[in-house]
Amino acid sequence: MEHRVVIVGGGFAGLQLAKDLKCPNLSITIVDRRNHHLFQPLLYQVATTVLATSEIAWPIRAVFRGRKDVTTLLGEVVGVDVEKRLVSLKGGHAIPYDTLVLATGARHAYFGRDEWEPFAPGLKALEDATTIRRRLLLAFEKAELETDPQARAAMLTFSIIGAGPTGVEMAGIIAELAQRTLVEEFRNIDTTLARILLVEAGPRVLPVFHEALSQYAERSLASMGVEVRTGRPVTDCTEEGISIGDEFVPSRTVIWAAGVQASKAAVWVGAETDRAGRAIVQPDLTISEHPEIFVVGDTASVKTGEGMPVPGIAPAAKQQGKYVAQVIKARLKQRSAPPPFKYRHLGNLATIGPSSAVIDFGRLRLKGSIAWWIWGFAHIYFLIGTRSRMAVALSWLWAFTSGHHSARLITQKETLKDEV
Image (cartoon, rainbow, N blue to C red; front, side, top):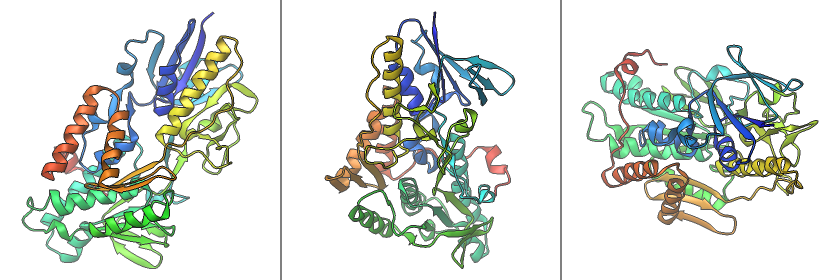
């Protein structure tokens, strides 16, 4: 009898699992509410006009076109019946399973201030990236028309909330956009006067990196014209700007890079959760009392051997997907289960600006141009398909040599749309 595996989510964990899971008498169904797999580490480059959407996303169906055992469904999961072993989709459809893997990822979290979201979009999906890109480009366009100096200054003030890798990387590219790419294209404004504000509630930028690398990143950002504010949280966010403590900063473009929250997958299966809504899993990544249900990636709360949480990054998700494939294959072949999941940290990487990055491998720490080249090669290597690797490499080469970004189009519909 065929064993039915249902994977909810086509991210890094779900995709890795499906790729590694090849067994006789096994059928795999991947369900996702989008038809594409997204390479999230480069999503901010779509938001900041460096890359096009097609360069970092691929149809899930195309990835598995040669796998007759894999079925891809476009649908939104709304619940799971753990007793009947059914996954419920919006619209009334239900998918039976023998083994269920929840890899539904996470969304940005506003720490109880969800009313900020319309003014400060986060960055987790292609739609988020294109929204941010549109607002960035329209800010310069509207400033070109504005005659009031104060209103123009607010339009040319870009605030990024959160100074982790995403916030630092976005601040660096927005600075490059204003200082280099757009300089000669406007007549009524001086784009080099744009104010880029990076706000971090904690004591330093890139808090997961070694302190020396954090200090290097902050100095590099400052040299690019980025104003870094640490040690004070944002207390309010409106259409007009942000408040840092008691200080109000007029800013018409605000980007959220401060926190994430897991999907509702843990609620579907009645799993115990941590503060971020992630399902607390067993050492084999299953949930308590349901060995047939695995939770992986950003949806799961997993601990390292030292008791620290496994970070929500792509390498961790891929390792979990690979591990679950091993567990399922062992069960189907009636072999002993593999040892408990053990996360192997491959290091932290972040780019700051042209020829500037930081890499923290623990004892080995790199910064500057050599780190930038390693960062670039690493990201190109993990992209799916030769075509995507070539496209991204050419886009980076063009941006590096010419200073121009290739993805700066705003469609007419987006131009006329009433923006926040």
